[in-house]
Amino acid sequence: MAATNQTLEQFVNYLRYERHFSPYTARCYGADLRQYAEFLSGEAPGQQPSETPPPQEEGSDGNGRLDAKLKSADAMVIRGFLTHLDGFGYSPATTARKIATLRSFYKWMLKRGTCQTNPMLLIRTPKQTKRLPKAITVEQVEKLLSAPDNRDTLGARDRAILETLYSTGVRVSELVDLNRNDLDQVGQTVNIRGKGKKERIVPLGSHAIAAIRHYLTLLEPDQRFTALRQQSMSDPALPLFVNKNGGRLSTRSVRRKLDKYLKSCDLDSTISPHTLRHSFATHLLDNGADLRSVQELLGHQSLSTTQIYTHLSSMRLRTAYDEAHPRAV
Image (tube, rainbow, N blue to C red; front, side, top):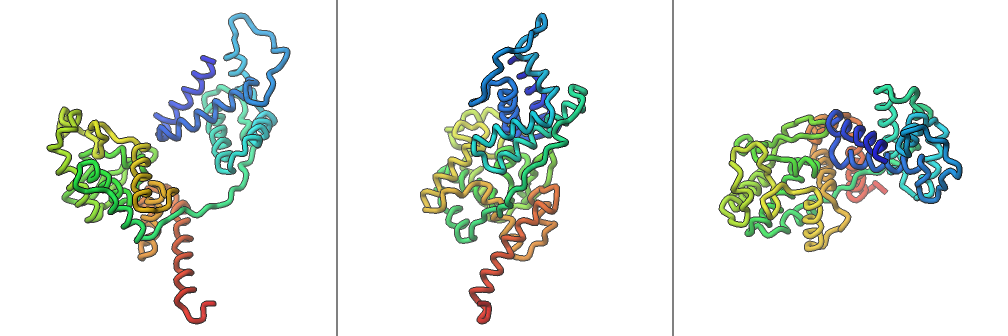
């Protein structure tokens, strides 16, 4: 499959380095395409390969045949693949992502002149039920933020991480990407590198600033972080939040830390770092922030993406109204 893998790698590299997709998103697209390639080659589960394969030209191999199938696929082939996906019981959102992957792939192929037509032009994305983002209450946030032991360096780091997530509404991928020099302690802001390498400056609340300062105060003299001490404090690549070895913290590690504190304070285990982002936006709108400002703080390209949070605020207002107004019900 070397030739096909090379094609897929080229596309994934295009997503990463030209479209500036996150590594995680690019990997998801790559996995979707490998599944599609397996379907075309007859290697997908439940699919029988052709009993009489087409004759090979001299020097050709399975990769060449599969590449040819990728290039010549029409709408009927795509619909066959979508029917194949139905057997896996994927959610509508997952199926929609796989369709989006194929749209991007064939648009890229057409742009490069690798294929003559785009079969995805005749494929519709199925309608999805809109799900409201999950937000937790201020009281739940405060309970979570107080869970880490602030006396230890790693506990102070975890408190600073949670405070930063809630104070800024950043994505967890943006959080772990933060470097020390992204932090402006005097101006109480942080420079965020978001999707598509777009940068934005986000204010930090006083609690988040205090938590970060406390964490850095404990971090500097801590003898456990040998790798960190080998880096200059002025190094632009010096990470803000580090793991126990002094290297950059991963998104998976942040999720594991959060899971630990959710368990310790008996909160819903389905709360994720993204829940803190949702809560950040919802609480701002609840307290009178305008939608455009919240859009800029979240780094949303489209205002319509931010507008979903107004539904949460409206629901909260309705609940408060129903509970407080004597003639509400």
